[in-house]
Length: 155
Image (tube, rainbow, N blue to C red; front, side):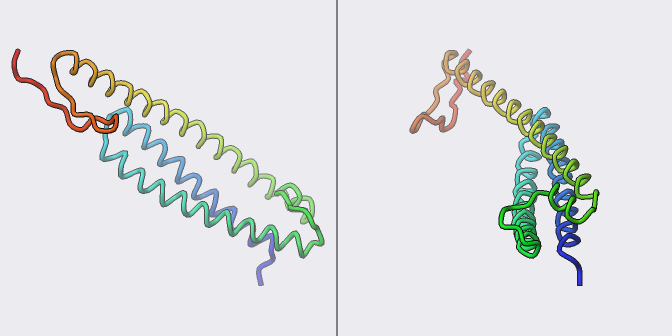
């Protein structure tokens, strides 16, 4: 039977793999946002949702295993990967921890960059709608949202 630390390590390995996948998806999303490729962004949104769901399930399993290992070890409080490393004498848990921190920082940075690109795109669209409105185009607004754009063919 596989020991609890080995099960934890296995789940952490799966998390690392999925975080790398999410990071790759965010990089592709950035490219699609820069290229104004709406279909590509929509497709990646679905893939990101799937990756996030997998990561949530893996995190729940990791927490369950950590809690179980904590109980078996006689600890009443939670355990960190540093604690598991010191209790088992297995330094690979510290390496895994560093990898996870690095991946999470990369994901956070790319996510923020993509958010900025989206905000700028929305600002550009809003400015374009305002410009067309000043040029005589009519917009149908319902509840503050633009519903279609009618542009006159008259010059």
